[in-house]
Length: 168
Image 1 (cartoon, rainbow, N blue to C red):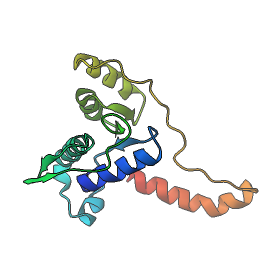
Image 2: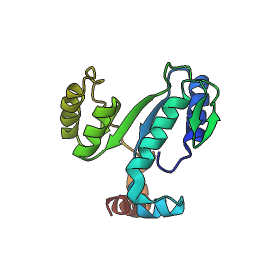
Image 3: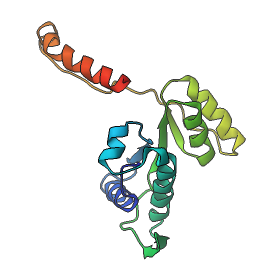
Image 4: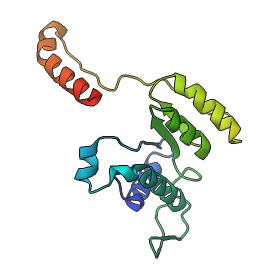
């Protein structure tokens, strides 16, 4: 979310929520790749503040009521179908991300399963009801082939590149 204009993101998701009533949610991540922050003219050292600003803004925008934004009164329309707007999930791969999601009352997509326990405990401490059941992620990519042995030779270098780039 740190790469997006908060008002544009709020409106786009509200429109989508009206098109697909109640089936939209936002998975929010801070980002971690320096070149992406550079590309969008954002300071990676301020990413936590940027993320909190965006999430606070979209939640105000989803009320459908006017609010002050950067010194101006604004109102984002349409109002989402879901009361309060699409559900917000926070993604993350650290204890800090689990604690942050819990303290803000968001749902959580952990980078590894052990973090969900941290999240559950912190959410209870913060006074929120138990979270939704931990959703297990599915594959993040899928290749379909009528001849996997043949096509593996073509795909392997690309899969290796993507995996190594992500790990880097």
